[in-house]
Length: 229
Image 1 (tube, rainbow, N blue to C red):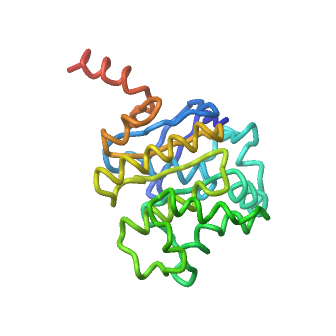
Image 2: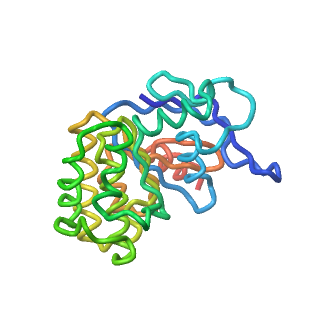
Image 3: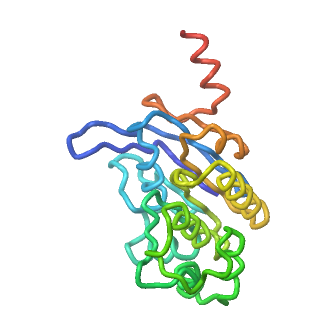
């Protein structure tokens, strides 16, 4: 579903962030990615989404459903993101001039889909009956739940989640992760979740660790760490 081929990225000062990253993620998989702050986890999500560009080198470093992101112009990349991806950003990006229901329904509207599912997704994240409220009436945790509902409402093939439980209390975080997992499995989606939370990572099918040396399964990382410690 998602394939990375020798993906590399450096910042403007030429400091490398990601180097020669290769991995494959299948439909129906829920993957947690952990790692130290500043190692490039959010950058990786932005690259996968086509919101940032990889370094020159491999001609097709990111493939989504076999489509090379590098082969798409801006309009085509936007269409692919709109129809095939769902995003959960740390900054929420909830639109202040739209009601909660309108925010959640936006992906359905943009994709020409029936909008009835928006209300049920608000209910699923614990905000049923508040569809007429505006974002300024919400706490940070509530806005995060709106962002999650919006990311899932159109049943995207690829969900990219950057610290999706960072503003939630433990009980709410657990229920939201259960919802995320259930949606992924029901829709045959692939989800990549960046998190610092071990409790969140435990909900995933597998956990990978991003380091300066690359991306590896948590089990292998623990074994290698034990070997060289």
